[in-house]
Image (cartoon, rainbow, N blue to C red; front, top):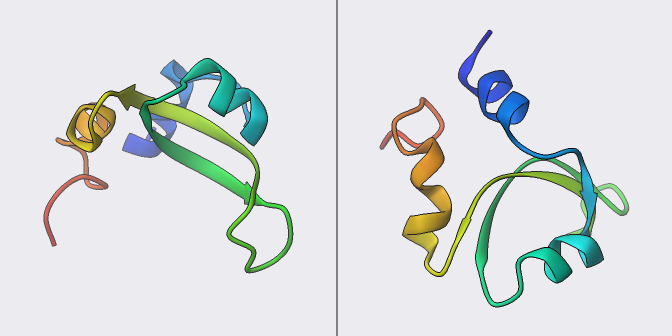
Length: 72
């Protein structure tokens, strides 16, 4: 199991954008498995949340030590 699968397995089920906004108001969220409304659209149909918090740093803390959060 790679890092993304581990993060998703402890994360949430896919949520719609409205539900993400309702669950995490005034917070930053770290999303994986993002499904856009249309190809190349910036609008999100569904996504899984792997982190959230009052700052970007807090939202991304869960992935900070994975290959996704490592500096390039």
